[in-house]
Image (cartoon, rainbow, N blue to C red):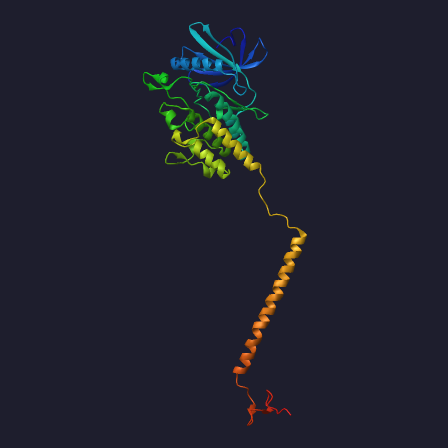
Length: 343
């Protein structure tokens, strides 16, 4: 690029990423002494026409946004470079790693961590969707979620953002398709993104944080992503994820606010101690023991009473060996068991 300072102010220091028509650089702002991120588009590139439209839209939207978890717009300008023209968008730099980098490095989010992540992202979506018409990010994915060392979460890269009604998205060859495979729901693939499309992307991002697997790697049951074998979460959280990943956007939660509130309820329920056995008072233990002993005594007495008549009846009913009777049925002699006469 020759001179590595743009506008005499932004010194390009490192390449953060390359796209079809744009490069993203880490830069130093010599006016403020702060680091920044510069997205540079060369209008000489083959894909410049559509990329220029998207970059202009991104700058226009960022100018309207004031949210602590969206890096602010610093500058937007065009600069001539010989036969080439460069369009540059400058944003605040956030120190951290993308969610994609963290998970690929081996981190797996616990349920509580994933819920906290979901709440933070849902709040950003609440803000965006609260505009009229709603601002749709359309590319919420792990690579566009920055996590700082202090676990603050930022949503970045508004290159696919949409702030117009659907008919303004039309292109001579058909609807504009933007997004990332696996994180983009059916209606967005068809060119008709709605606020629920960002909620689908949120659900897919949380599944990635929990499992370490890209949505495209997971099997589907029909059109529904079969994520449950790959995550270990509570039943309420699994049900919410399933709703977020519904193929039909009408079956998903109605808003980012609903998602945030559901996540907060699940987190609150997880904090509540589970009911255990009640402690038994000593006097109650003694009373139960007395009742048990008394009941056992009564039972034995009843058994003895019932057994006595039965034994008598059994004795009268058996022939008495060695015994004979006189004329008045008076016993005269009784033989012992072994046959010796008893005197």
